[in-house]
Length: 320
Image (tube, rainbow, N blue to C red; front, side, top):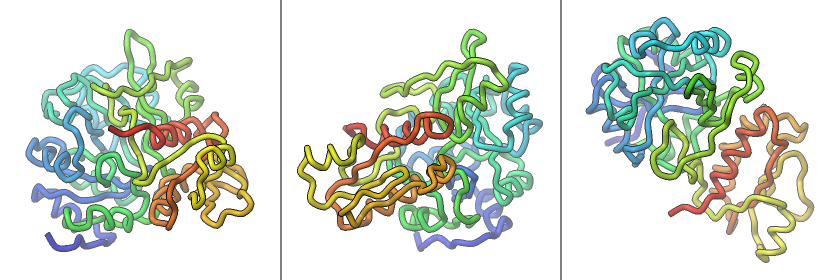
């Protein structure tokens, strides 16, 4: 396949999608690799292009809560309340699926993850087509998620025909995934809506740790969002000393470390929203520098910091 065209045309993206092709689309979280969620052949192509295990479910994107009703059954009232407050936005809800959603989308599970993305181009696109979009992150499976059209082009530019360019993603980490078990609210993946924000609507929640075998929701695998180079997480200076690292790439939260040229700072002002926006882009940047390993530290573990730390821990997880 020739190199993907990159541009802002919703009409071109729609043409490819309606022809059963895949298109990269922007959201407020990361860029997604999108295709018709109701067509099993298209969904299979998503898994093939990403190299994603078929036991890892996909998120389905819809333009509104009203349109979501076509794909789910008997949603709890609390789900509608969450949608009213955080849709469009970085919140995915696991809800009992309508049989129109193919088994391949949900890895055979009886719930589907639905969300309404908060990006004007993709919302316009979703309004114009008569099917929802299955859209995991537009990158090879396991690698750092893309937050610009150029990130997508670098990794998937010869595997898809079109990249809908909506500029840099303003949130920068994936959506929070919420579901319900025995009437209790469960967070299956930390993300762009904080635990505290969810609890404003639902009351106390339980945060489930990730799974390494049969995930119940997208993005639950332990080793995920990983850079290509060896990655360490903890006290940066102690790790550098213990490992005797001569040319490390460093990702620090708020302050630079003296004496290191390849030190990127997530947020000099200590703003967790800025840190989230910069996370994947800076991991990608360090991956392309002349460094042997990447060393990072955790950020304050509240609000969006919990989701940032979740991604950092997965980046540091041993990959099989």
